[in-house]
Length: 257
Image 1 (cartoon, rainbow, N blue to C red):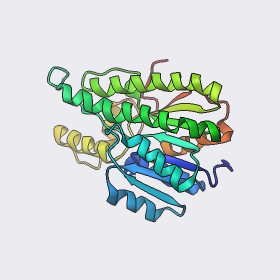
Image 2 (image 1 turned 120 degrees about the horizontal axis):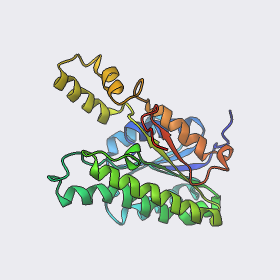
Image 3 (image 1 turned 30 degrees about the vertical axis):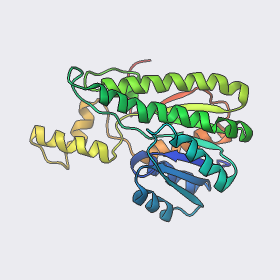
C-alpha cells in the first residue's frame, strides 16, 4: 500500500530507542525525511546512519521550555516544511503515591505533557501550511488507573485531553490530531520490568515475558513496530477522516469502553 508519505518531513521525539526509534525507521522506509529528537546524540546518530533518507539530528532536553521552538526552527532551516509531528518523548516514574515527591510529578509533566504541548504549538503554523498531522504516543494508563502509575496515568490523561482539544482546533485549520495508546510493548524499559518479574517469581527470564503477559490478560507483548505502523497510517492521507481518534494497541489489555 502506498501511504503517500514520500519526501514529506516528520519530527519524531524520543527517537533514540524503543517505540520512537521504530517510528523513525518505518517513516524512513515510507520515504519521509526525518528530524529525530532526544537527549542522546550518540543514539540519534545511529538512527541517522541507519536511515536511507535525509535525517536531521537534534539532541536536546524537551523539559527546557525553549527547546521545542529551537527544534522547530532547526527543522524549518533544514527542510523548509513540517508535515508530521510525532510526540513520543517521555517516561514517568512508578511507585507508591504516598512516597513520590513533587519533583517526580513535575518531571513527568515537564517532558511528556509540556514537551508535547509546546512542540504542538510551535509546529502548528507549519502544519497548517502543509495540512499535516500530529500523532501523540500516550499510553493505556491514561484510561485505566493503577496505584503504582499515578504520575504516568495523570500525565497520559492530560495528553489524551489535549489530543481531543487540538483535534477540535485542527478541524478549522486543516490539521489532523490523533493519539495512540500503546499497551505493554517489549522495549528496553519493559525488559527491565520482565527481569524484575522473573527475579521476584523465581522463574527463567526466557519464560517470564509470556507469563507476565498472561498476568496482564493478553496473549503476548507488543512489538514497537506495531505502534510505528499505526503512526505511518495515521500520518497518511489514507487516514484523512481520522480526527481526534484515540487508538488502543494493547492486545486487548484495556477492557473498558
